[in-house]
Image (tube, rainbow, N blue to C red; front, side, top):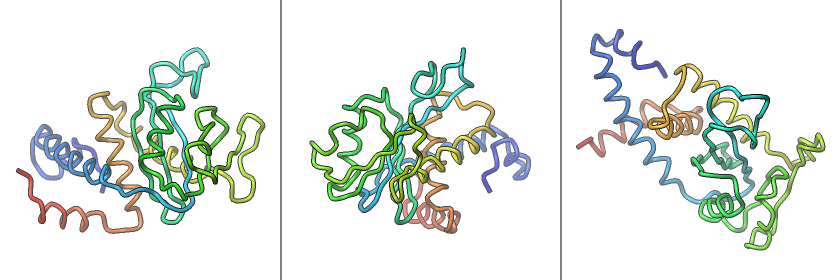
Length: 201
């Protein structure tokens, strides 16, 4: 039901710390499941986003300070995403993740950020771009609307926690990714089966 720990503690008549402890255990397992994803194949979208407090002194996007940088990949066929917290948005960082998570035969869609320069040189011969700086957001099938929809979903969901600490942001991000990927399935049944097959130690 995606309730916070306070509401869950009230409904279950347990201490809030108990609810938080169990939620943390669940999120650790969920994060591991997310990290075990197979390479993405087919048509994919790649993009970065920034999470944190509202922008300071008008700076936003890649120029924003004090925000957590997250890189995401979405597979169009099933709408599933993979996310990763990144130290920077350089070519080396982003292309290393792409090389590890995206099959070389895939069609990659990105925006015009220079870090995506050279994807063809490392073997991704099908790379399409949309240049947001020129008010270009789609050219037929060339767009990154799917991954941008995920960013909107993730930010809306995380807002309800009224601030997520840097120490737990990774786990909250992975839970958000997992919920998005299973949005058309019974997540409760899937997790229950997972926990039964591999109980917590």
